[in-house]
Image (cartoon, rainbow, N blue to C red; front, top):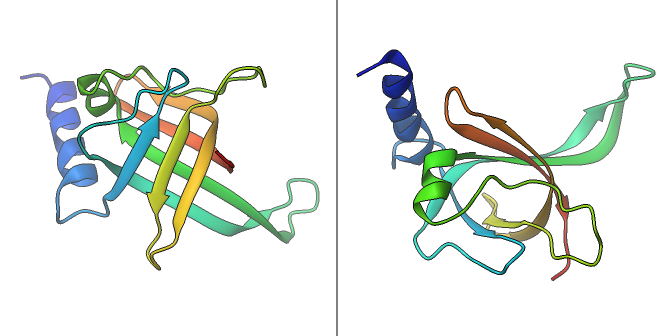
Length: 128
């Protein structure tokens, strides 16, 4: 087994095991396919950002999710990405935060790391 294969296997432990920071995630692709089995990953949803022009802390919102590419592929998904046409449906990611609040967000950008096998998606609030 290569080091890359070992790293991807370890990634499963870090992101999807019960002892990790895993969060159940529901993914829906633009064609309406939704995961039938649970997908797990890590989710960040923060409200303080650094203004790049001033370096000052500002109020805002940045939400991201990280999901193993192999877990997405096992359920028939490609890599989530932005859908720029408003005539088409976006990739949608849903999760429940630590307080029990549900969040529905669309993918604004997908950044896959094909070496390790993870995709980081940047999210924006979405109304179905």
